[in-house]
Image (cartoon, rainbow, N blue to C red):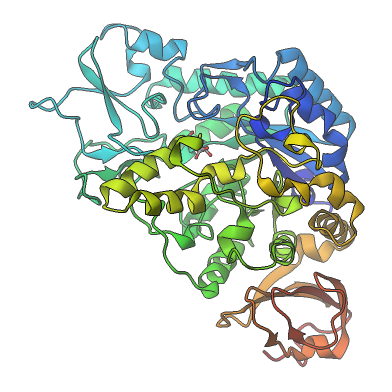
Length: 564
Ligand code: GLC
């Protein structure tokens, strides 16, 4: 236990500042709003807040397009507010973790403005410029992640620049050592301010392929997702190790990298003793419900065994070396209760099922704002009501693919990132107590009955269930360091596993279906003590619809008398 680091023992809470709490009344959240809510966050048992970008930005992608890495966006406050947040959080045992967006900048960053002046500019090589093809077309057929070509033509200098995401997010050229050095300086600037670590955005895209060439088209637009060409390219680990040496090594902080395109088998190279980071946000368990192609939004049917397998593989891959960041939500995903369960399922029960898994897997639980309340998706009436740049792109792609407007909108309902970005529901007052102004994105209509104030008072609420789980995780070392072993692997209703430490074990049983199912594990029958459940009682070993239970079985050889 003592050899665990602080960030392995704690919980991480992710805040999307624009939607969290508005102290100024302008309709958008801000840093002082976060500071006001620190006690609420501390009471959840949180030791680190991951703050999505708060730097100066034109906000084309809500801050993931940075125009100045060393200053705070005026809509969020000032550097003094930031320092106050860091200090007040520290008093409560919470560290602030900054989001580093280093694959690209905003096109409004002074570096890019200089880079586009002329071919001879000293910042020209800081970005990725290429000539058009003889017919004027973009250099390759790569499609940006938000839709459209990944190349934009610049009239002034008659070349294209590459952008993995929106055209307002030009990719930096990591091959240039000046670029790498200035990025390391920026990260160190924030460490000097006392931050507790970094979430590193879209890092798998920083290394571009040696040759830029067309790829087989994966859609009717004749393009191929840029991801295929640029994610996790050979040589990337060298950059990452340099990054580690220059910034993180030997410091009491943690790093968690967003790593699309890294397989679970590759995890050991990326995390742990010999890896570049402490943790990796990989998406094998999140990408189950859509087609692995150019279209994020095309739904596919998935089975529980797929989810279980993905989670179990990640648990195995990080069991010896490295550490797992457990998560079901973030600012890029729909709400988990709707992603993993049908809309008609009892929302409270299923939110608790996911929470049970989140807290009992081996790793650090990452909670996304509002997840602890069981917040749900929204359905806005037209695409114009959405803010998310990715949703707009996906809507267009769906239309191009021949879907009707209504069908395209339904994809957006299910997959839009705005589902997770609606204002935090604090109270049943106007605008859910989020702002005294007009909220930048509509508040979910269910704030009346689903809000933090009410849930704090209700012992049966999702929020209070989170509190109880957080306490369990503090009480039982087994949840921190016990091994993970999956049970009932082929079962399509029950996700079951045990955590084992010496002679003790915990058995976790979660019914992901709306039908009851007997779950006769003799080890529980023999001496299982129920620690927590989302139902009031547990008369027998039949799990009711969406039931979750955690048992403790103490003091015997864990494998004795156990059958599945
Ligand atoms: C990451 C962020 C996402 C952003 C993208 C571009 O995936 O999580 O919100 O749009 O990078 O920076």
